[in-house]
Image (cartoon, rainbow, N blue to C red; front, side, top):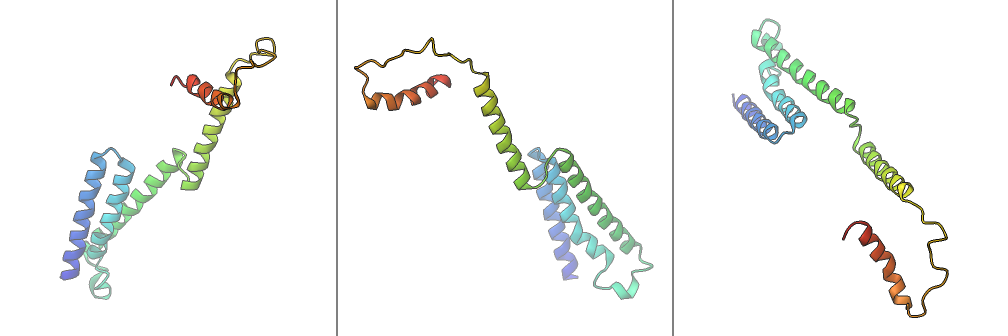
Length: 147
């Protein structure tokens, strides 16, 4: 009796968290949380504790198996959607993001027009000191980004 109450409370709390997660527009996570929260009530409904007594002919037990099956289908559906989106593992997503950043940086550098040697002064002015030269690179980067 106490175990059933605790499992029911855990399931209700999990479904509440799933609703809040769905409200925040994180639907895959909400479905996954809902699947996790259905497991305790499914186990109670199957009568795992009283397995040998009356599992075979209990409609509640078979309904519990149905709930567990539904939870399994929800797990597999969210995994399939995540893989279809190109989710993969966390390491794979981070590596893909890094590669995308590198390819963008390379393409931006390649798209910049080259000035050639004719537009560059051959000698530096005598008034430019070494300290000013160090900041010229930084100033060029800031100007490039419009800062």
